[in-house]
Image 1 (cartoon, rainbow, N blue to C red):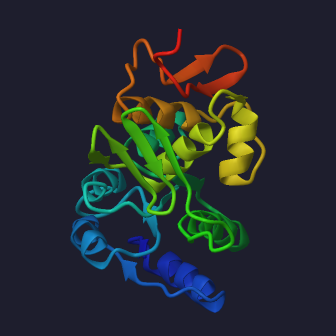
Image 2 (cartoon, one colour):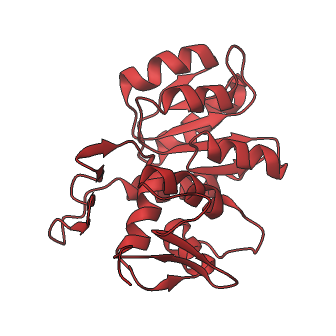
Length: 227
């Protein structure tokens, strides 16, 4: 689903994605997007930031209550704070306008690959005390209760947890999750870590489950009671 109020841009984007094998619907109003995204559950949403009705940040925040699939924020704004706000509201990725169609298609396909079931390997399930991460269902359970996570948050948590006890650098995380090199400036990983910690019962001010290792990266601790 493309949420874009610029009719010409929406048509061009829709035609290009359709020509490359995707089924596309277009919404031009933020309020309409808030209604339709949870109802239709598209595989992915390309969301403009500046919209009539509710803006893109509001749309992202509102639909995240009932929608877990990827949201790609497409915006003319390039300010770091706008990008950070988008991630904090639940966006999975962002692309600055103007964007070349081939780059947008590549980002869309990369996000869609995250939600494709892996038919080549058996279902995986990790258990760390009261925390269960079920990769076959893409579900996180804490104290017997399912935890709401965006697809990007889940992917990051699974990557860290499946390498428990090993420090993963931001460069490694970035390349594994987004398929591009880390530029040294992007803070999306740090923002997602801050969102994940309380969801898995970690203390954001004194984390024991997901630790920041200065100048190296992040470490998922398998047994927080050890020692």
